[in-house]
Amino acid sequence: MIGATRIRPGSAVRGAGVALACLSPRLPGRARAVLASYVGGWPLNRPGLQVFVVVPDEDAEPWQRAVVPLATSGASWTALMLVATSAVRRSALPAPVAAVLLGGVVAVGDSFLADLGERMKAKATGAAVARDAAGSEDAGVTA
Image (cartoon, rainbow, N blue to C red):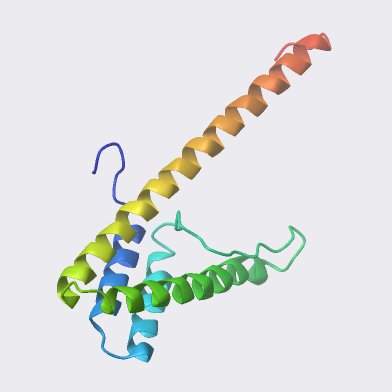
């Protein structure tokens, strides 16, 4: 736990994958490490940091609702992390130090954004419940 943010298991897996990718000398190895860690972390918990996600309509097939968000967010995450790892590898920092720093930033940032998203969703849900309760009282119906 860092401050009020708990490092989530999926975020730790994604951060470790990014750190491992920083240590890989070739681009295909980096891509495999980042993509594998994203896919491996997805079932543990959804990422807080999602670059681009396509969410199918509610009437779409169940397999599409499961696969399309994972595929689109995984591809955009991989592209962004490949740019980040390539930039870090070109920095003056030694690769192992840069790998630990970038992996840590990814794990903490991803966890923080997931927590923030949950708090915002809870706040919106609470506001909707209060609005519905006020609307039912105005109509003479008690909740």
